[in-house]
Image (cartoon, rainbow, N blue to C red; front, side, top):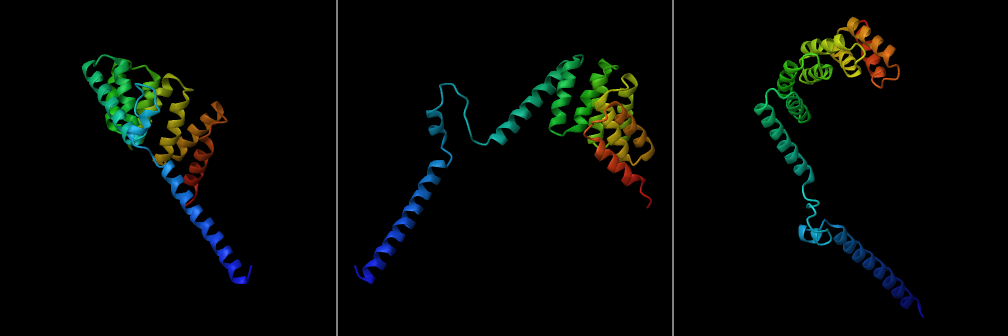
Length: 199
């Protein structure tokens, strides 16, 4: 075999490898591409819900439908405490805080001493940016149950958001005493230190 034939053989082998690799790559991409709905359902058992598609959109639609159903129930049953709380929680999940507050206020009228509802009112008000109202509701929850962790944690956060260093320090110390391993403590202390820095 002379030099030219050897070069042609090497070039042929290299071209074969390159073309083979490209064909394999294209075929494997085609196999891993999402299948259409008819292909998906063929391997599924009968009556199986559809898989794939726009799952985020579907989940959003389902959540919206749940909220609408819960709101309807809450409106139709204004004396049903659980219906009010359920509607409030769903409104809160989709970040409609003011609507959540309305349902929580209705629930609070039905059971004024329910500590969890008081704490949820604090949380919804805080996330809506109503810091004074949030502080009021968190303090109301803590009057009923001084060691209620969500209310105490929320009170620390809202006082820091308001810039009330003295009250925040008292709340943080109380939180540290009741729950020394609370995961929010380092962040609360950092924010408090920033508030206390001389300007």
